[in-house]
Length: 613
Image: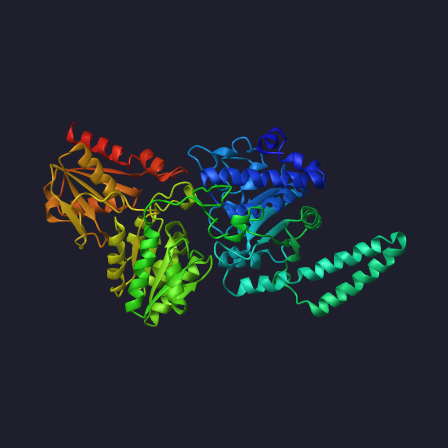
């Protein structure tokens, strides 16, 4: 069986009629399809491979004509997409106008809820179960959540609300012992202890099989053993945290054994109460390179299937430049600490962790806690730097505002993946941080265009006694203009013509390339710092100003620049090209910038129009 054959089946309903042998063959075909597609398109491989048998078992048990399946960790849903009528189009995964790498209800009716960031799925599933109860429906709400997501405080808020609710809710805890990197914290240790109980369940099944083989004579022995089992379990095994919260606990079970998983899910399906099914899986299962190095195969741009060699980009990334710069700064200042939310490798902090393990902290998928933790460090005289993706920092806005800014604590936020991120799409675009960070009182925000500037700006940020952020994009830098050198300060100004073009961050390289290639008589204002916003006096002399911004237009830096100019009496023609009132869909970064008119061709076209050419 292969993807083409899967596409001919009436999915997902055909799964319910398959026997165990067919289910196993289906799982292997799905695994092969995921490996082949991700090797070409890139994507989240290791986590998706770990969910294949679990997905097959869920579709065998639950009725998708009425039941709702929510993927709390959305990038684990590749097998689900393949088996819910999207096998034929699976080759378009993460490509422009193709399938999203995350659940999207607008893409398929089988995607019950859009998820991109971990931790919200249990709350959403409980909401759906409550709505079904109000409507008199017996539908099941099923949420698949990763073990790392349980470090997110929102999950415990949901569990506290769910307990003893009697709602038709099944929580499937997909426990692979990892988030992206290896899990840290007390909950990870709790799950590890719980996983060791699997030997108890395996022994129990072997004994039951022995007595069942005795036929009618074995049944009394099984009933007797079950009574003894319940007594011993109560005496020897501690009540799980979930049962204490009023949620029935089943497991742990081997999530790669389809028959076993189906049996336990059927039991959960029959219960009219909240149930948590603890499923142990292996990240990267079935593809040795991913299983042996799951962190490297978490999110890949592509790879060679035969060798497992991951495609690498050319040149260094902003993330690696950040890690190198922060490590160098920490060698000179023992107060500098690095904090991340389960993204050690992604944010470039591996080197820092190796050199300064005592000053490195991974708080897990808990950005709100991460910001408050940094504030506590700062309150005691340390210099914390929180490395976090732009889209994930959004989750901690209240802590940014009330704890960091209100208390004027010198926390530095290294905001990675600012701007367009590409194939991960709407839920991961870093297009909002410039707007929400600059509205926070007392916050200083830097916007480097090149890797060397990033290190310098981090040094400036660490010297402040108030909160600050250094925002930079995913990947590498653009082409450095001939003769360009960073001179520090709030801005860089180049007088070259009758129109003034303004931008910040990586767009500066694209803007200069557009102007230089077309030999346009356009002056350039490069903002090194977007808050506090400073402009050169020369800006007032231009009748026409064009602002290019890789961020939202509403509340963005372009609007703040216009307001500042107007407050000083400027009354010229001000044109803004930025992201309008919309979410930017998945595509490559190059395609997204072109679609927004923010690549060099789009910039050149607008500047020519402004010049009257």
